[in-house]
Length: 94
Image (cartoon, rainbow, N blue to C red):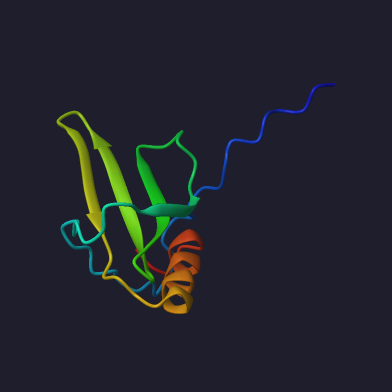
């Protein structure tokens, strides 16, 4: 039996009491952004944990019929951004 290929993590559905994330228009603060982690490409909504200029943020991309709609969180120290990333992935933040 051949195992199915691994295709990435998925964000969980919103849990009871999930906090609302403040999503902002993208800030072109740095020429280069490194994607540290990301969710699977198989869904219409993709999340990426990004790092640039000594700070981190979460980027959300919604694939719509009108094209991709990109939003991001505020830029945070790495530890706070990783905590937010974990909350989004586990459904405790939306």
